[in-house]
Length: 425
Image 1 (cartoon, rainbow, N blue to C red):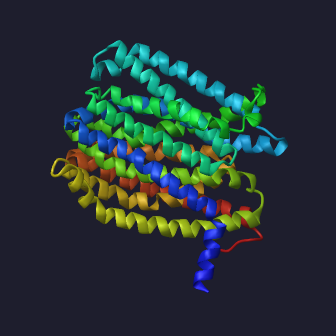
Image 2 (image 1 turned 90 degrees about the vertical axis):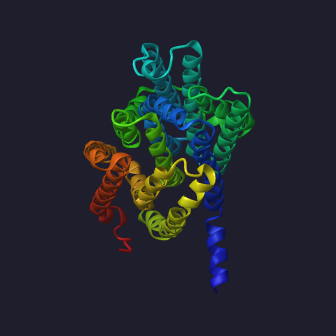
Image 3 (image 1 turned 60 degrees about the vertical axis):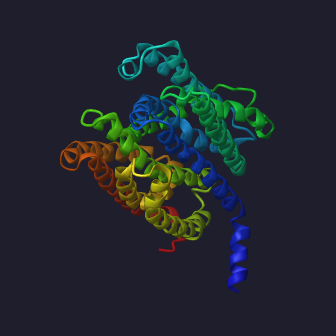
């Protein structure tokens, strides 16, 4: 009976198991990039690399990631009306193109970068190419997810990050690897990968381009709140480093950032689970039976596996870091273990986020992101004085835990309306 039940579970969740396996591999490769950089660069250069990434990820959160969920949700709505989603795709292209010009204007001013890296045509070119690559990666990934080509999206990301790792190794062997040229991993990955996956894109659904003001307005309305939340998420991820910049050396920043990468990797993987389920939940948000199946069958299984994996990772971190870096990043071990604890429960928040996005409750989502990010930054400033680079890890743990509680409370308010008469408690 047990074996038969296990076979049925595998059969029912075949696509998700493949998706998860491929995603884990791609996320491991993505997470390996900063760890590899820390291995190949001096601690001070790795700290400098962390600082270079800050405005890059800021604009990525503000101008690229902010429209991802909006595009997936509204492309699902558009497909209910017909066979394609070219109006949503056109609106997404307009959003991304406008964002690029904003980033380019910032780069030409060089207000931030001029303080940390010497101004040169090569550094400007690498940053521009990296941003274009990040745009391309997001667009290709979103199109595949909107079309529910989840396994293909997983393979695309796996190939993308594999190429990134290969680039880092080649750049190191040819003495081309510096804190600024390392950014080209974001360019070569998606640009080389796209031709390999050209044939799997459902071009008929997104072409010809078709502009309608309604769809641009809808995606913009969703995205502007997501942009605020994205900036808050950026500050949550990079605010620690931004504040540490005024208190500690680049070497200490590198130590903190290395430990933080473990937390970041876990939260990003939780985000990929959200991306997997969002299209189907968005389509079935008004169908209590399907929503109940998602909440009470699929969710508990994934949460159980997540918690077990987090516990194993917590106790494995010291061994992994010692094998990779010896005694070079001892503080990073404590930071990583401390942040794994709240990351263990981020998976609950991710499942609630799927429902909130499907219901277009973006005001709550982004407002809570802003509030708890503000709390995180305030705690950073206070705790750095008492605990050094451990302080921001404590602040992040507190703010993350409180945000999960807020999501749970808000979900309890929505639960009965969504699941009645089907409610398993």
